Figure (spheres, rainbow, N blue to C red):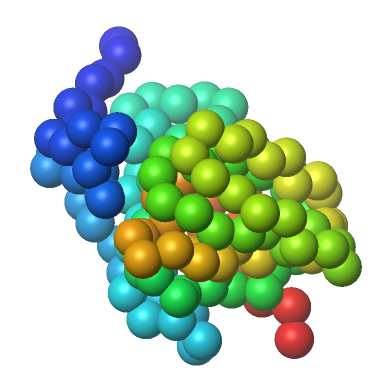
Length: 135
């Protein structure tokens, strides 16, 4: 059976909120205040994929990562940039990013508001021990 998690703020808000979804701290050694919510996952019965929502506070960065799974990312609000391999790319609301298998990547919030984004990964990758930060 399907599931719906209603958003409580609009797209133009500096951050979205899903009050029925647990909020997890996803802070890195470099940046505190990063949050994650699993919008569609194992609890909802998703067999093939996980849909997650992240916020990175202004000036914050996600982990410098490399994984054995692909990511699909859609920026929902804020401005930032993404490192893909060795090149940085500017991002803003509505931009879509594909991160390939084993590609080094990192997201950074560059504006005055948090960077918010939806991230889709394979179900098997959520909590996967191979999803470790690159040193």
